[in-house]
Image (tube, rainbow, N blue to C red; front, side, top):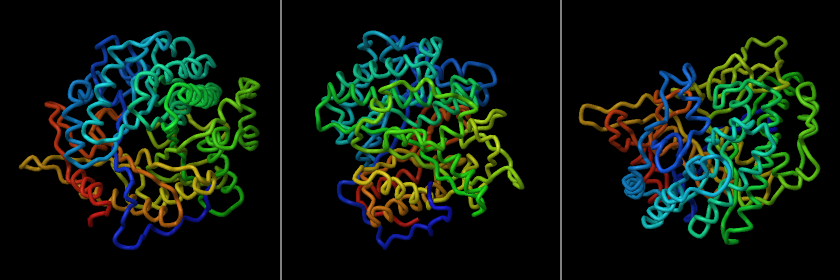
Amino acid sequence: MPDSVSSSPASPASPAVFPPAFLWGAATSAYQIEGAVREDGRTPSIWDTFSHTPGRTAGGETGDIAVDHYHRYRDDVALMAELGLTAYRFSVSWPRVQPTGRGPAVQAGLDFYRRLVDELLAHGIRPALTLYHWDLPQELEDAGGWPQRDTAFRFAEYAQLVAEALGDRVEQWITLNEPWCSAFLGYGSGVHAPGRTDPAAALRAAHHLNLGHGLAASALRAVMPARNEIAISLNSAVVRPLSPDPADLAAARRIDDLANGIFHGPLLHGAYPASLLAATASVTDWSYVHDGDTRAMHVPLDALGLNYYTPSLVSAASGSTGGPRADGHGASDHSPWPGADDVRFHQTPGERTEMGWTIDPTGLYDLVMRYTREAPGLPLYVTENGAAYDDKPDPDGRVHDPERIAYLHGHLSAVRRAITDGADVRGYYLWSLLDNFEWGHGYGKRFGAVYVDYGTLERTPKSSARWYGEAARSGVLPGV
């Protein structure tokens, strides 16, 4: 668990010069931007079903069209090149490639990603491919979803299909994006697809996501060139206790186990934390962990992706003035924290984004340094970091977002400080390249560096996009 006292604000020496090989990227996910949900053989994912279920998303909005990246990808790649990006992290839509989650690939689906990768390479942009960003084929959910062991094996089969098609051109591979969200928001609190509220199922899902990662990583290594890099992107939490009281420290430890240890324990250290197993014994008996699972999950990684937005402040419920908070991604009457009903979350102090998330770059510094200590020698990437603001064009059609520029400056300064202090951080992926479908929030939260008019789908780079592009071209953070 991170130290209970926050580090001082990031303050690297001026100017903040980044290593020459540092990757300046942006990130997206398939369901949030592609649209074309019924084209070229694609079938529904759990997010298609969830978003079409009344009451699940703001205004009943869906990703049916999203921002039409499926048809506009060439323009979007040209825009990345114009901005000066050197890397782009995207995800592959599982039901576009393997509609039922089983059997052979649909070549029309793979062809889209072949064209996208070729376009990126032609513009000198390094592709970073995420295999799973939450869009499980609905047929697999109908068969039980991630709480079922078979889903892990289906994921490995799908990973191999994609690697056979793109492994010769894509060198950076990410198995899963934020498996915590898939498990605990999808099957625990129900605010994400598939919308189930079963604490025991959430824990089973977490284990099978870990197993799926390990099996997929082994499948990738079997068919791809040795030069390719295999990673996973974790939204590891920065958990801080409200006070040094032993009860608050214990509460922070419990949340740290559920947010972090449940994934990095088996993946990095070869075992689930004993404290996690004890804390969740009343919810599950962990009998779904089979002999050999630990070995299958604990495969060597080439890098680790870290997604960070805001820290968490927690206390024991006894004597607490705080209230329960479902998570950082939405509200729910159901807790995504099985075995932690006596823990309370508190609003951290400071300025907030449109998501209500406190802006705190020290959390990113702390997170990077934590994994520098826990996994020495393992290269790190910040695979998501960004902020939503209520961006609007001015009368001339320009979009000024000085708040996002300040946000990026603060967090990139924290990354540079971590590098100075010995962290091997090799790249930063801004979330997000484009305004897009923001899951349960629909289109009401704009994270993009590029503004999208949802009526016309016209793209307009915000002032933060130009600022970030200047940083990418020079390797030095401009002023704010």
